[in-house]
Image (cartoon, rainbow, N blue to C red; front, side, top):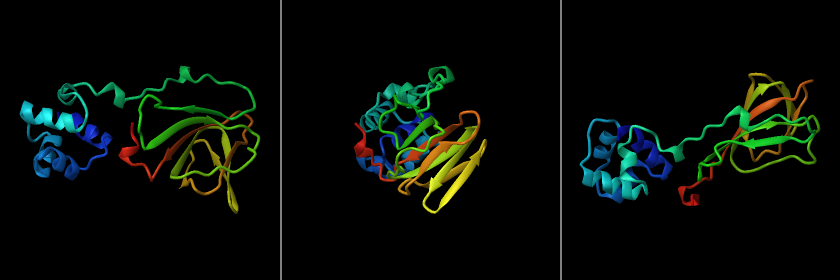
Length: 182
């Protein structure tokens, strides 16, 4: 149970205090369960599973809940040679995640306008070279380079290498709340 209780609790957007309040159990007892120092009774496990809106068998399973895993295979994102930027969202089956990961093949053309959105953004260059335009600066990123910035800053990304660049972008929504999950 220890292996998956913490991930189920976090997925539900609950702190240990919140889970304790909702289950009527103590925070220290729940912490011991999460760390594998205590094994709950079936009645306690059912109470925890009910609050976390999961099946009690998932809490006792040796296998992770498949809805908490997302595998993205390279074959699922075939390369195309068209000029438009290509965005391939990752982990689309996982609903209510605070991080939004993408594989992006930016076009060599600069988009029509700078983009901005809430949260933070992390860019990692997997291959090629890209240019990130931010107000007052243009940053060149090569294979293996990364950039982390406030996504509310207007920004524009384009490929500048002879071969089409490929980047991993993860957008984190700082304003994400578990209530947004549905």
